[in-house]
Length: 116
Image (tube, rainbow, N blue to C red; front, side, top):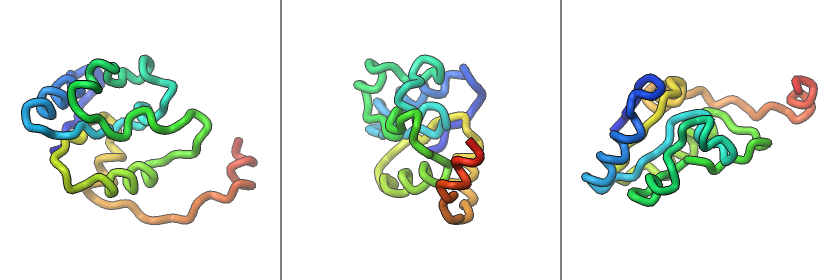
């Protein structure tokens, strides 16, 4: 099940309700909520909400770690097959899931350093 919508529209609350009711896992599809240091800034579900039903791909990336929609899609593929509700506001994540994503090589460290 995919659940998308604008910021502050109640997506997380609805996802939690569906997960608790139907025995689903809540899976993050928000680009900011993957980071471990942005719980409040990104409106990530609270610790109490996360205790009600399993939540995946939330807060598992450190702020200094390279991460992209490709990383997210590979991680999501690893957990597919269980009942879930995928929730978020990052359209690129949903597009990658439903339409696919081209595999491209990793950016060389020297190029990334130059861009930084």
